[in-house]
Amino acid sequence: MPDEATEPSQSEPNHGEPHGRFFLLGISSAAFAGCVAVTFAGQFITGASATATLTESDLADPLTWLGAALVTLPMFTLLYLERGSRFARLRELWELSGDLLGPVVARVTFAELVVVSLFAGIGEELLFRGLLQSWLGTYGLLVALVVPNLLFGVLHWVSRDYAVCAFCIGLYFSCLLHFADSVNLVTLMIAHSLYDLVALTCLAREVRSRTDRVSC
Image (cartoon, rainbow, N blue to C red; front, top):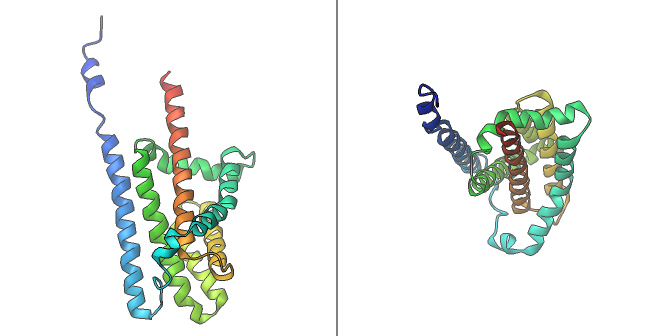
């Protein structure tokens, strides 16, 4: 005979799921809007040309997309090492991402992950590589390469190792933008978005798989 006391609770909707989805999309939208607003305000105040190199021709150029795919190769290698590494500190980076984002990204659709990834890739590259690196270049190359990515790391601080990893990836992007003639800001926006999309998708699938095993 079913337990009448527990039966109604089993049929109640899970209000946490849409809340988590809307929270992720809301935070991503707000962060993107903030990055864009600061970038345009910064251009006006400093005279830096953060958006001057953005062109539709770059977006339509197949070489831009090929370059973005090549840029992500070291990052995907790092992602692979994080997920399966026997080195505790590398594995902890992935587990930390799962603890922070896993319960939320596991509930969102792939289309929503695409939106979140685009917001992060476009907004952050526009601000950190577009505005800050361009503006700080007037104070010397070392300042332009290091300072924006120190800030990038600090704003991604969920642990010391996570912040160091974010700093290194940001520095890698900054060096590519400065030294590689074939890499432009659009290339980095695409690479950043693509990496985020793959990482979030892997994270979502891992959490769903873990949940399915527990429920069985």
